[in-house]
Image (cartoon, rainbow over all chains, first blue to last red; front, side, top):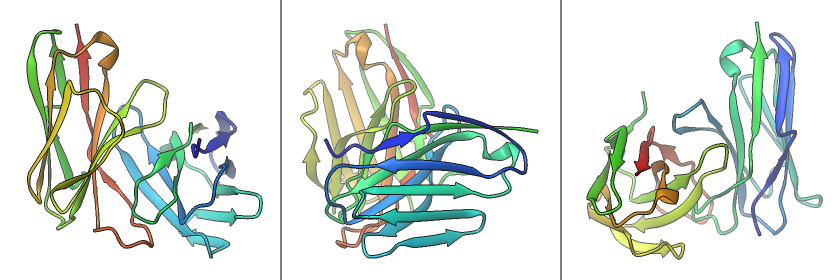
Length: 111
Length: 115
């Protein structure tokens, strides 16, 4: 299965701390994307990183990709209570945006 | 607010009912998707439309019937569903296929309960 596996499954931190989530996958990819989902709502795209890229930044988000290890990480710096959500990695094998989502990490940021 | 609008937000239907889920986007995207998400699980791809043509059907049972009447609208027709079909149904859209990948824009979903 192409499905990514995130770890940890759940993460609880205090506001101001950094949160790191990891994603592993099994086959070659064209790109990898990270999404956030607040409870019961749709997913929001965070970052897309292509297979020839190693690191990408967007505001407080930093994503790395290691294709040799088939893994990616999402770092959220200086977390806020509003960052509380589930975070999913999604792999795109072909580049045609047919995504396969990982199991997700539930992040809880306490004030 | 999301730029992909799904209606209704909630739907309760019996196993003999016929209902439809609707999705609309005005971002000029030419690829549209249906995903199904069970509680505490990741979204699972059901269908992909590209330029109003069905390009992917992930072996979805025929009681789910998608339709793309035009480039802005996507429907999912439901008939003779089972209680295990209860889930959050998510619609998404993206730029046309480009072989370099595009982010998906999701609606907030329709919470479906089959009784």
